[in-house]
Image (cartoon, rainbow, N blue to C red):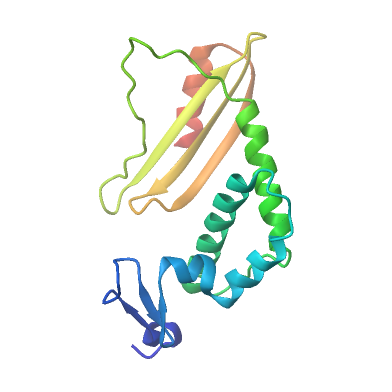
Length: 177
């Protein structure tokens, strides 16, 4: 192909299934997360930072570097954050806050089923909905529509108001359709 980026990519043929050749540089996972000049510059900025929370910082930084590299490659308009350290630290803070609000439950003697999203057949969309009601009888609903490749096609969230569970569940489907 002769449209820009497609010419410079050769998948496979490397040391593992995750290597890609880009402009005569073998793009391995190690290169993407550590050795590439952009990743190396980012790591060098944080070396003086105390090791408190290092594991979370390292994992989040790897996730961000990998995501940014993929977006640069697949999305022409993508631009990396101008202050990546602040972006990563914000991500970690938000994660820590979310973990504080999670509720753990005792699952001894119970069967635990992993729940996951399954895509619809090709050329179909899937609507996933949920409705809820509080102990004050305030209800809400929301939903997400995704295509067969998992792509976001739309979504909604709505306050139903003072209502019942049945009305909240009915509203979620009505709004989704």
